[in-house]
Structure formats: C-alpha cells, structure tokens
Amino acid sequence: MSADLVIRPATDADLQGLIDIYNHYVTGSQCTFDTAPFDLSTRQPWWEQFNGKRHQCWLASNREQVVGYACTGTFKTKPAYDTSVEISVYVAPGSEGRGIGRRLYEVLLPQLAQHGVHRVYAGIALPNDASIRLHEKFGFQQAAHFTEVGYKFERYWDVVWLQLPI
Image (cartoon, rainbow, N blue to C red):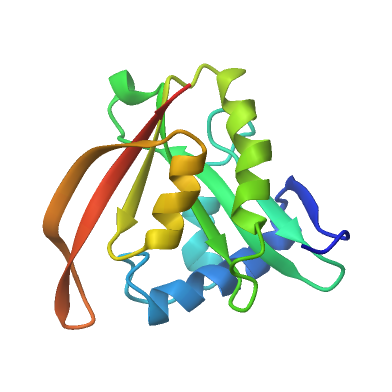
C-alpha cells in the first residue's frame, strides 16, 4: 500500500469523488441495489446524513484522487434503532486488494463507540467474498441471510447481513 494514502473525514469538496466511485458499483455490480447513477443533486440527501457522530463518512485518498470511502448511516428510521448503524465501504476501480477498506475501518469503527453506537450492520450482496473477509477481520458475524431479495441485471441476488457489537 502506498505510504501517501491519507484517511480523513470526507468534506463537501469530496462529494463528486465519492459519487464517481459509487456510480461504478451502481452500473457494474450487484454490490449496491441502486440501479441509476447519481449526480451531485441526486446524491445530496444521502450526503446530508453525515453528522460526524453516529453517521460518518471517511475517505482514503492519494495525491491524485479519492480511492475509497467508508461510511455509517441510518440502519432503520424508527427512533428505537438510533443506536444501530449500517456501514458501507467502496474502493475505486483498480485500487482493490490494497488494504484500503481495512485502513478505513481501522479509523471509522473506533469512532462509533464515542457516539453511542451499539451495533453496526453490513448488508452484503452475494457473491462478495472480499467484503465478507474484510468484515470478519473486524469481528462481524452473520446475523441473517436473505435469499433472492434484490433484483438487478435481470437476476435475483441474495444478501447476507453481518453485525458487530460495539
């Protein structure tokens, strides 16, 4: 991994870089069940959830560009779920397998206990062995397996939910 990799909180100025990475997965992968690419205006509501407390967005960048990000957001909207968050990590095409997701989680996960997070959940569309391995390295364990829960690219996809107590 490059020594010049920087992990830091994402800012408004980084949003386009985050969108570019995410849109790669929207149009070419089952990793997200979004089916249409985003632009700055359509991604703004998602961006507004990050408050630096339970909902955070951290990015990895090198000197040239954003190469990955990890974020926590609302797990469910009902108030009793407030101490649970959903976590996601995305790495730029060509940057996979370099430990970027691990580095992001090493920074993000310890932040959550300071803000009253009790459980972290990760929904992973299958197959995605790399994501499952990453989460298991941090102690996530399987909580549920939903079969054929999402339909994208003319087929159904299973999703496994992993959980981590904080």
